[in-house]
Image 1: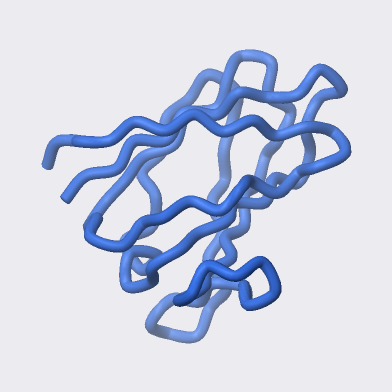
Image 2 (image 1 turned 90 degrees about the vertical axis):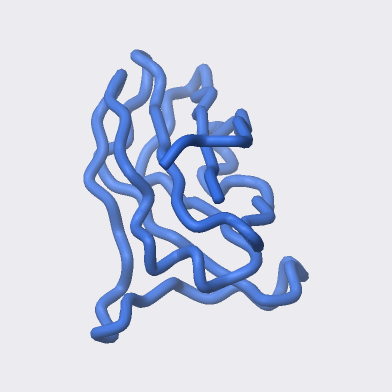
Length: 108
């Protein structure tokens, strides 16, 4: 279960939601927040066509909203239920004023 694609996204204090991330064709992923990160929770928004107006909150197979508890300088696996969708946006509950450079790895 290796990773074939690395993506860096920038979250800012004024924009706590990531740009659109294409995840079609990938089966797993991981995320790592920088040492300056202040977020403790991430929520996930998904879309099938990638249009900014069509994203909705992601839910797992049991109908529970998908979220992830995170911490600075720590890597976490992305929930596999996300990978049934084609496009992803990630929303952090907090971002430092200086912003946060978040690393995402995707694998197929």
